[in-house]
View: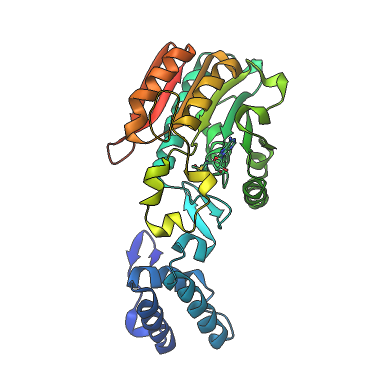
Length: 308
Ligand SMILES: C[S@@+](CC[C@H](N)C(=O)[O-])C[C@H]1O[C@@H](n2cnc3c(N)ncnc32)[C@H](O)[C@@H]1O
């Protein structure tokens, strides 16, 4: 679509080159979806000098999609809030519900920032299990506008070295468009809080995480587009000590957070709706004083929100 002086118009189909129309039809036939075909064709430089090369590239992408690969991996990038992130099989495809996790995390940051003087230095945020960097880089890109007057120090951690390579590529891309945002982010390898330097103990203002929370039983029944393509280490977690399926990593993050957060700090953890009440119990046991949940845009309980 094109936008001129605020008017959004559909492209003039009659004016579309016949070759492009034929290509869209061929890609649609391969992937079984006109919408996905449009994504694939729009992703390529259809104005390039060599239409045959564009056609070959589009059909190669369509073949991958037809073989079951998720559209996001086929395209190689995916929009997450304000960012276009590189994604491939090394990382989880960032989901819309995680965009809402960032929204809740930004609100928590604003609350923390309003209670402290900017002269106390940057607000420290930690994104545990960062994957593509979706949460950490969004906080870096959007956070300063939210917490006017305060700077941010953001840690993006993962135990997967493959994922950290993807984060670094996304950080390089962010540095090209918003160097100040990219400068706020430090990438670190390690299991949950082990990735952090000791000097951050009791100095963290916000811990946010989207840990694996699919149970082993649910994994077998997942859509093959997810199960056969996305990293199992990003999806599946063992049963928690409370007995709740898939909750061991959520519990690990909740139990570890108290030692790293300032007394005013906050924890936001994405989870499955069936884990919400178990997570509330875990947070109370860990010593959080104000504990609640937040919903995604579909109204499902998808986050633990805990304040010290
Ligand atoms: C559900 S994915 C979330 C990725 C990204 N934060 C997002 O929201 O799209 C979980 C991430 O946690 C990482 N992970 C799994 N176990 C971990 C551990 N023990 N320590 C640190 N990261 C871990 C995985 O490698 C994966 O990148």
